[in-house]
Length: 380
Figure 1: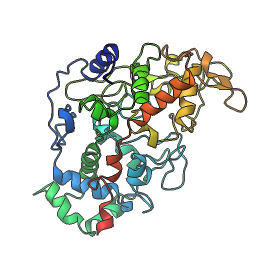
Figure 2 (figure 1 turned 180 degrees about the vertical axis):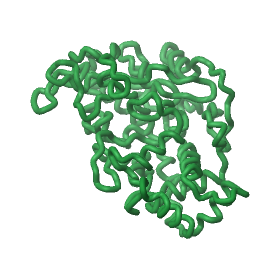
Figure 3 (figure 1 turned 90 degrees about the vertical axis):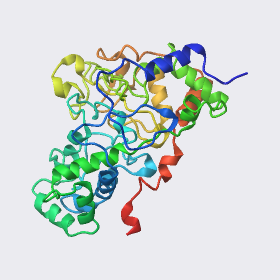
């Protein structure tokens, strides 16, 4: 018997991938995509070129880009961990703990909006300014060190030639606007479409997924579980977007992770979309992250408070997290702002194992060894 998806699940998958057409003209990337996948949308004021990608790769791995020379972008976004850091929450260049877990950069060219809880940050050129210049909390700590950093880059080989190649004829290409555009270009080249799921769904390789993984895929796409409502599209996220598809205008969800004092509140340190809008119904709403390479990106949730994929599934099966003690005590299953898609589920141990196997099928091992994405300074 064929291991193809059930008709219902396959129809659902195709709908998610080929959703409403955008009226925005496609901007072609200079990167060859497998399986004739749709192109990402590239800002017209920062067209993707191999010269900017190459420069951005050097900058991404360069600790000189931080105020105290201790941290690079790659410090929090490591290739071996699918461009995350394995920590509960990010740690800045001054040692300051952040409130949020570091998200993956894989396929971020296909993700809008970009941050955990702000609908305002739609482009990488906007987002990259936050880790570079933010002082609440400090991340790279560039503020007040701009001149020193630029002078350090100006005198470091091979930057003079790289900046000239990326912006030929520019009188002085060493500025932070160009740095941001180059890093954004490199990050857009971090693409992952070679998982077993991709080979099955796009490459027509019927044997790419095991029986267990196929059962997990059908469960994932089923109306019983409804995972696909928040984790759909090419990136397994409601924020998935590309040249043929606009992302959902409602990418943020309350998953019942907290319910402080059973009043619906989330910890004051990070209340999600509520902190942007001030609307009570937005309390605890965060973006559904991409599930690509999710087996490599523990710990989970916006605050890294869930250690394993099994624990994630247990929370969703229960319809939320019930915390019986501690400063965050409260029954998240009863949070009044919780998404309608997060509700108690009847899952057998076999169901859970099949779902776990499917999530592992989203791992793209080739991205871990892609020499075009690794640290170029190791070869200098």
